Each structure stands twice: as structure tokens, then as C-alpha cells.
Amino acid sequence: MQRKHRSGRFREDFLRCVPDLKSTFSIALRCVDTRKIGAPKEMPKKGTKTIEGDDHVPFKQVKLQAACPLPFLNFETPASLFSSLIFPISCEEFFQDYWEKKPLLIQREDCTVAAVYQVLFQLSDLKELCSQGIYYGRDLNICRCVNGKKKVLNKEGKVSYGQLKRDFHQKRATIQFHQPQRFKDQLWKLQAQLECFFGSLVGSNVYITPPAAQGLPPHYDDVEVFILQLEGQKHWRLYKPTVPLAREYNVESESCIGKPTHEFILKPGDILYFPRGTIHQADTPAGGLHATHLTISTYQNSSWGDFLLDVIPGLVFDAMKDILDLRRGMPRQLLMQVDTGESSQRLSGLLRSLADRLEGRKELQSSCMKKDFIMNRLPPFLGSDHSLLVPGGKVPQLESKIKLQFKDYALITLEPDQVSSEESREMMAYVYHSLKNSRETHMMGIEESHFSENAPEVCFEGFRFEHLESFSCSNAAA
Image 1 (cartoon, one colour):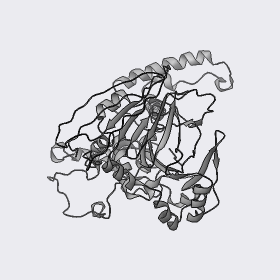
Image 2 (cartoon, one colour):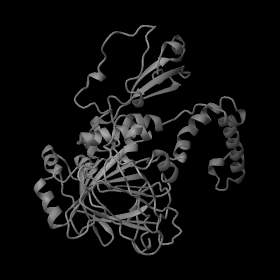
Image 3 (cartoon, rainbow, N blue to C red):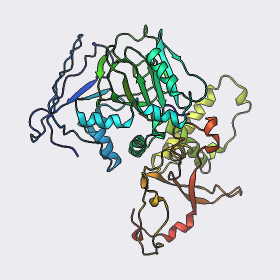
Image 4 (cartoon, rainbow, N blue to C red):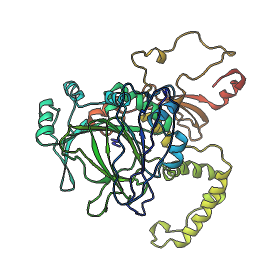
């Protein structure tokens, strides 16, 4: 992840798992094949079949008939959107059996789903995007996999559509488009809802590869990945992770990763999930059309370890007010010593006292993660109607009942006064929100010089803590 990360009636046939080659790889791909069979008024029928062995067995093919009753993406709530994205797998099953554990492949020969996916992005969109002024490096890369390495073929400055076509067709280069939600409303809407669902930043990239070509070498990522096949077909190979739930991106030599544990073809409408650290590579088969897939990625730097790094400074700061041992001085010349064995024992005891203090604590003070999420996430998708962002109507009275219009885009924290310069600062309640965030800079990073003057700013309002006593729970509705 570049961070500069109504269901109709149907009948489905759940197919077999791709063989795991009898490796010690703990993840086993589940393939779910959803197809319309027979009359549309039939009630759903479910079944599973698993095959294990050393030989790949082709996926069962079923002819598509007439209109297809598989669901559209349901944007009613963040949860309903994710449920429709991974349909027919339930959210409960997904997070219990697959999330951070093993890949999931959902195959659909469904005209409706394929059409919905294709609206998200397609090769023909690039002509219009080039006319708007997009740049090599910042907005897209042109690359090929050559001898197991990524070769970048970028030019300088603005992207010329004519040059882009020549590189694509003549050099068989892959077009890697960064963060297309900045330009495509459908992706803005999709990813904004997914950020609400995960409570984590959600990035995306589009990969367009000509026939008989491969853009990237085998590698693994530091994000949870969802692959949506938009156009054409893509041949995928997954391998046993060398670093489960990896914290960084890394390229792997094909000579060191062994045989694929899973191998399959993605077609339009299919979706693939795999955990961070899963080694993978993909190519477009020869003799066909170009292939376009969308990578949706999330949960970068969102582990328990990252959360501990975030909350421990505040926990230690508060504990120092009450625990005398934390305020005692370090031994002389401790910072000059190489062997700190005795000090490590002392620190272990202090950490245990912090753990005891943490046990009954209801609220942990985040140093950066919460603000980073609020500051960098997408604003809510409102289409052309921005009236909801403008105050209007009658001023609320004390007896009024209110509710948050965008509750998923607001965060309330209790922290010392950020404005006061006094050494002893009073506690304030702060309301942070994402309503004024920039869609154009989403997931691009503040270090991008082109966007430096538009770097994200924190939008918040502060209230004195004692003033909150004026509010009564009976007079407010969440």
C-alpha cells in the first residue's frame, strides 16, 4: 500500500480448495465459486468440496444464463458493504477463518458483478486521466518484471497518453496507477466506507498488464490485500510466507520460495484475499486480452505492537505521577554502558507494575495512531450534495436531542490543553473530524513535494473538561 495502505435468490456451487502441495504452509486457499444454476426462484443451496493432492484440478465451469441475481455492492452501512464485497462468505466466517490466517478466493461467473467491478477502473479511463495532467512516479509507474527484478520505465514529468500506449503495447509494460480513488468517485465511495469498517486507512492501486507479460517479481507486502479482477484474466501464484504477517515490503528470489502453494486464474468479478506476508506474483496469459486488477489494501502498521508503541508513552507519563520508582534516577553512566543486564531486570519490574496498572484501565491515551487515522483518511463521499457539511436549521436548545451526522468520521479524546503555554495545562475534550480532509492527497504522503502546500491538517474543536458537566445524557441521543 503506497503511503507517501440486496441479495437476490441464487443457487451456488462451492468448489474445492487449491491443493497445498503437502507443505507446512498453514494457509489453505478456499475457492468459492458462485454461479446461477437453474431457475432463479430456487432457495439457496450450499455445499463444500475439498480436494488435496499434488496435481492442480481445473475449476469447474458452469455456463452463465441470462440475468444474474448475485448482489450489488451494498453501501447502506460499512458492514453491509464489506458483506456484499465478500459474498457469499459471511463476515463472521471471514474474520474467524481467513483474516490474517489464509487466503480466500471467491470466483464468480456473473455478469452483474463483473460489470460493477469494471466501472471501478478500466484501461479506457487512462485517456481522460492523462488529459487532466498526471505525472510519472507520483500518479503511475510503467514497469516490467525482468529476470526476477522490477524494471521501471518511467519518463519525466507529465504522462503522455500516446507514449503510455506505446510502452504498454510495444514494451509489454505494466501500468501501475497509484491511489485511483483520488480520481474515481466510485472508489472514493468504496474506500471511505471500508475505512469506516476497518478503522484503518485503506489504499488502492490499479495494475493493467498486456498479454504474455508480468509487471512485478515475487514479493510480499505489509498490508492485508483484497484483489478485485476488473478486466481480462490474470494468472496468480501464491507461496509460503517467509515472514508471516510481515511489517515491510520485500522482493523474494524465485529460486528461494519453492513451488507455489496455490495457483489459479482470476476472471472479471472474482475477488482474492490474502494476509500480509503472503508471497505472490501474477502475470497475464498469452493469447488473450489485457488484464486489469484493483488492489485494495489496509492494516498497515496496525498491529498490537504498533498500538503498544503508541499508548505506552502516555501510560508511562501518567504512571510517573503516582509510582515513585518510575521517578527515581537511573544509575550513573547507564547510557555509557554496553552491558545493562542489571538495569534490564529493573526495567522488567517496572514494566510489570505498568501492566498491573493497565489491567483495570478503561481508556488508553493514543499518542499518534488515532490522530493519524483521522487526519489522513478520506472525507465522506457526498456526491454533488455538500449541504450536509454546512450548518443550517434551528440552533439546538438545551432540551433538544441531537445526533452526529458523520459519527464514523469523528473522534473524541481527553487530553491536556494544546493551546495553553502554561506548564500545568488543564484537561480538555477535543473533537477531531475528517470532514475537511483532502481526497486528492489521500495515501500520497505529505513528503510529496507537489502536495506539500496541501499537507493534511488536523480539524478539531476543544472544550474545557468541566464544561462537559453541563451536558446530561438524558438530553442527548448518540
